[in-house]
Length: 221
Length: 173
Image (cartoon, rainbow over the protein chains, first blue to last red):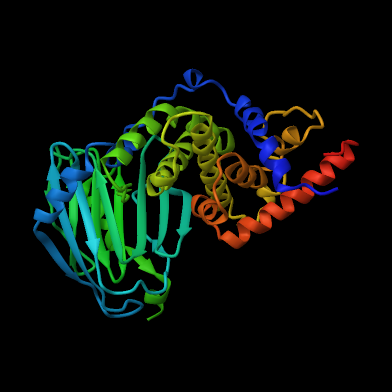
């Protein structure tokens, strides 16, 4: 008994119908998506890209970051572009001419009291490696620490006009720190990595977490 | 977490993407949540699925319909399974080889269509993307983050499994 392509082409429409019938109607799939999800999706939705392109072209290079060369990290220069518009929120673009090196996962050696790691996520593709650790305190508090190895990265998030922007130094590089008293986002680079701490943290907590990130190879030196 | 901007080709792609988002985000969440059983994880999987669709909007059908719906749900299912495996640290788990516990009973009617619909996720996904949506192995590999060669191997294995299923039921396809 052989199943041929012709048989499969003939049966596929009914198979798809049977599969889709196992799903509820769209109208019954109501879910109230979180603000974070909606903010994550906003840059992808229609009517934004044209303006973003225009803004990005006009944007100043806000930082040329020379990463540390000691330990496990080779010299990598990232150019970081930042733009802010009422329409599209705050966007960042990271660019480097250097090829991504070997990915070494970070270790978060300090977290605020009461927090513990609850999730670990690693995604590796041909062009980037993304590593995310999620921490919770059991009382609704949650923050993320993210590490990405890549040569080219575009990212964006929602309107941050009610946030204060500061530029602390993390791992020898100038960082971008947004905070509003309840929520904090800290963004910086180290070697070939783009790093981020975000969530329900004070700015002091976020900086302390960032400063205490280590790498196995680095600790061994 | 931040979101990574994808390179959709033009404003038409972005308009179609928005329609896709509004039409199927709830359905995609439903699919992801019944695999992951965690709303935050399910939203992450749906977000990853939309990033994948945004990358390949030129391959997404022009209008909303059963083929687009099947594609959106399939990508959401794949992203949810990938996340499930990553979190369980079972990179070689046989989740793709056996029917998932979340799956509702499909009709065991002995037809080829019924057997296709009841296949384990990876087999069903690849077969529907090829024989229902009409994508080639390279395009399917792009959607599912695998290689064209692996897609061809999955198709071969799926055909054998279908033949065995039908033989077991005494049906001659």
